[in-house]
Image 1 (cartoon, rainbow, N blue to C red):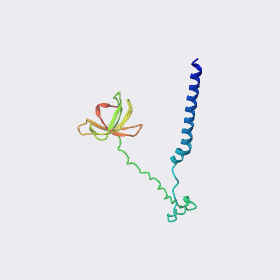
Image 2: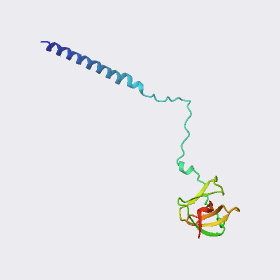
Image 3: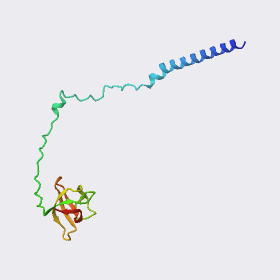
Length: 147
């Protein structure tokens, strides 16, 4: 016989929760939400007026003429003393100066054709030009096979 009493209390509890929920929703919608918006900026009679916008802003832009690039002729590289091929299986790294610590300026793959241009006095380093890419740099003599 306790079922009807339990049902009455459940209905009154649900009604109370619904009533509280609807009051919270109405307060949120009509009281809280309007204050969350940013107000419009007020205007005053002594405000500075905005400068008038020109009718065609594109016409006011002056574009200077683009200078044409000039092609500089490279000085003719010296003639090769002899031709050779890269015999290092991993290829070669061309150096800016005849030194292992010098920076890299290019390279050549294994069996690439190179032209030897110049040698150091001790004949340890040679200046070579890769025939396919025209890159020039210093390599050790032992990495080149004379043709």
